Image 1 (cartoon, rainbow, N blue to C red):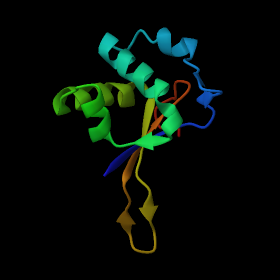
Image 2: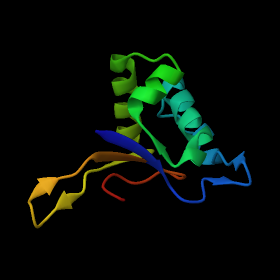
Image 3: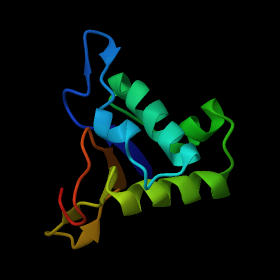
Image 4: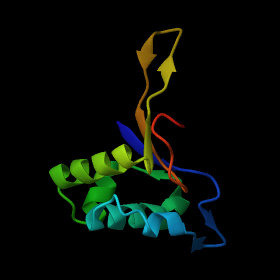
Length: 107
């Protein structure tokens, strides 16, 4: 299972703050930029499932995976999979949408 989560403070007073850094992200395709803005716009829910997102914007699995991979590679989305050290098992994958561009490996 994958959950998409958002950094605290991304939404305040029902106004979505889209960083100037996002709109100037020349390394992103227009499609990935649109998905990032959409994710930023709907951040007030806290998290949602990728299947729900894909259904809401009529996006196929392959295109969703390609765009999400682009956002992950560029640093706008961070992948996190917590590990339970006592049972040595991995938990659900979480994708964190960032307010500002993160350097590779930065959480």
